[in-house]
Image 1 (spheres, rainbow, N blue to C red):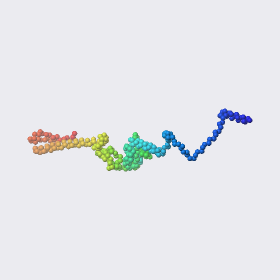
Image 2 (image 1 turned 90 degrees about the horizontal axis):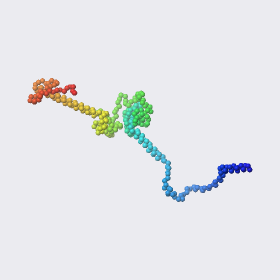
Image 3 (image 1 turned 60 degrees about the vertical axis):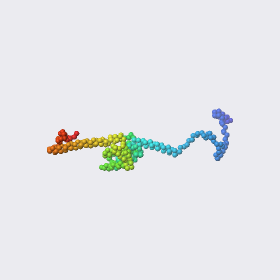
Image 4 (image 1 turned 120 degrees about the vertical axis):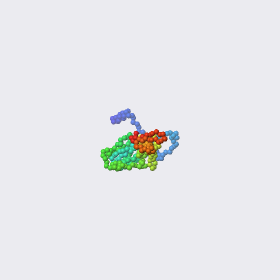
Amino acid sequence: MVRASEGDVLTKLFGSLFGAPQPAPAPVVRPEQPAYPRRYASLPDPRRSAESRLVQRTPRIEARREAAGRKSAASYAVSTASFAAGTRTVCVRLCDGYVFPIGRLRARADLPVHAAACAAACPNAPSELYTLAPGRSEMQEAVGLGGQPYRRLVRANLFRRERVEGCSCQPAGQAGPLMDLGRDRTLRAGDVIASQDGADLVTNLSRGGPVLADYRTAPSGRHLREAIEARVGALRRDAAASAYRRSLQVAETRTRRVRVAEAQVARLRLDIGTDPAPAGFAEVMPRAGTGFAPLRMVAPSPFGH
């Protein structure tokens, strides 16, 4: 009896605190699902199907590859433009690291031309073409076509420390042969080539080689002709030579006139029965009835003015 009363007290206490216990829910009987799909009882509402729906699709691999290709092509174009703008090329002699300049790179397509010029400038030793970025002036900052800096070469600046036996662009005691202009792939229209008489201007390029014309007579602009003349000076030399030839002609004409006058004096003295005039000043005697006054011819001074 004590135990039953204690149990009732505890039950009432928990009921007052947490509420009376709820009865267990009755089980719900669900109908069995058929093994085949049900058919539509009616068509879907067309008003709801016309509404815009947000559709999320997974991007395909082909689209990703195409986008990556466009991005790489754009980056390549940017790198090409920056590579060609003001970039200079230098030639590195690999046996001792000697560096010398080649020229300015106008476009990436000119790299084979600059590489050929590098090999032609140093035919007796292995060489490689390097580039200097715009704004760089030190040869030590050159970078190879593969991206390798010059400073990382094993023989970088070796020529400054020691002399490598047999490492020279030309054989010892011999001058390298000049390249035929027809094989020079670096020539462009407007280039200037030094000649024995002055300078020639490349007016055109043909299969047989460059077409050259003397810059003094070539159909070029005035500014280009003046720029070449400032370096070569062929027009000034031509003007000086022409003035010198004119002075010689004048002097020769004067000497011829004096000699003719001396011959006339000698002939007059023979006509009048006297001895020929000695060398130096001679007096011209007038003939009878001519009415000329006595003349005196003076020979030019040998010291000239």
